[in-house]
View 1 (cartoon, rainbow, N blue to C red):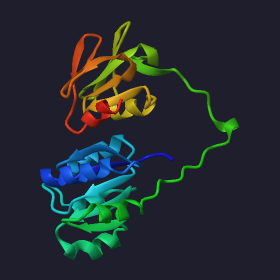
View 2: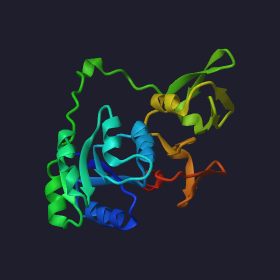
View 3: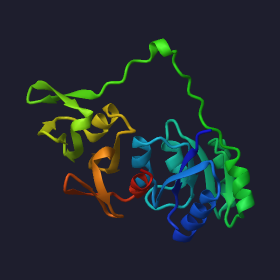
View 4: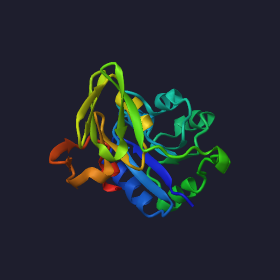
Amino acid sequence: MSNIKCIIVEDEPLAVKILSDYVSQVPFLELQGSFKNAMDATDYLRQHEVHLIFLDIHLPKLKGMDFLKTLVHPPSVIITTAYHQYAVEGFNLNVTDYLLKPFEFERFLIAVNKVKLPVIAQPPASEIEPKKDFIFLNVQKKKVKILFPDILYIESQREYVKVVTTKNTYLSKMSTHEIEALLPPQLFKRIHRSFIVSVDKIESYTAEAVEVNGVEIPIGRGYREVVEGL
């Protein structure tokens, strides 16, 4: 059975630590990251698959319930808060459960056991296209073929992306979101808002940066778990 990929949206460090400890004790939960505000969480959700959000109500910038209302196709949500008065609103928004702080591990486990992974219909084998190992990029009014094994990393440069390969460097007018959608996720990982790296080309990493072909590339806040999970 696949693990349930989850994130924590919580601005209190102690609450994050407790939730992280609880998650680590449940074999089928996989913590992808924690975020101090809803805006950072929104950016992560746009780029990654998440099955479950542990969501606090009182957050800076955008409150938890308001954040939840902005999600067009929200994953499962478990509210974690010290305020019981939002329970009715939470359940009206189809949250999976509502945990009042402080809560024990047993109550946490009851909540996460309610979460179900989405069922994704698989197409017949005859309809599955063979995997490509390349993309074509628009570079100076022509289409250039870029092989996935040649790509070292990709850097956002405003309305362009810079694709650095073992052979050359290319500038193409597109966003990092657009090129990320064209790349196989098992081979390429976003480690920063502005950087996507080839997993196979990572030579070393610290908590702050990875090294690719001798180039140090920063790891963005909220993306450290992506690198540690490689």
